[in-house]
Amino acid sequence: AKRHIVATLLRAGRSVTEIIKNTGLSRTTVFKVQKLVKEGKYLKEGLWTGRLRKINVDEVKEAFMVNPKTSMTKVAEDMNVHKATISRAVKEVGGRSRRMIERPLLSQLQRDKHLERCKVMLNDIKHAPSSRIIIFSDENNFTVDPVFNRSSDRVVAFNDNRDMVEELRTVTTVKHPASVIMFGPIASNGTKMDLTWFKTGFRLKSKAYLEILKDKILP
Image (cartoon, rainbow, N blue to C red):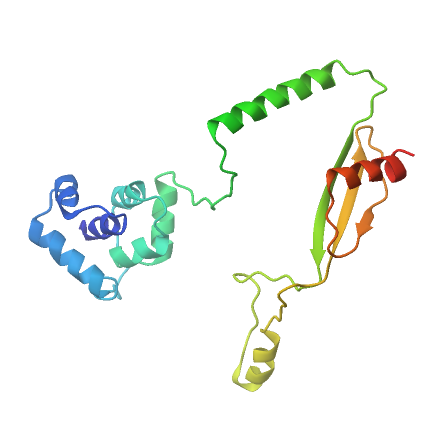
């Protein structure tokens, strides 16, 4: 009943000794599961084909508590059930599948510096005269290469249109695509300003930024 937990612990890099201590299983059982997982047989043999199998939701929760990055597909294969069964079990015990997010890697010194600067900016804005207008701006680089999602953008193929589909499903790209930079400012009073476009290869540095503010935004 705990074979899927052993497989999950093995994938998480736990040693055989740790697994035996945590699960209470015999050394022979753990080594047998380890061998099957290495040979790839453990995930393929014994698939359930009969009636809907009932599973222990606490075991499902324990499998994800050991390694939250384990996919539901792997746990379903280890327990010989459908992925939807694992998904329902996760919801039943109050779990949610969350997507991965990116965050900048900041040291504690950088965090403290950011906090200090934010406090200075907030204090300056708080005591600023009502006539002050703050300019918010951002720039973005646009390329002529087609944009597609490898996961969701698909084409449906049949035997009758296979040649056409093979051509449609190919997205051509180049190493250095043509691109332009767009600079867009907006004022704190809600006033929108015209977009500024730059040619390929242009780099918007501080000197050019100040010139744009003087010549085009704040004439």
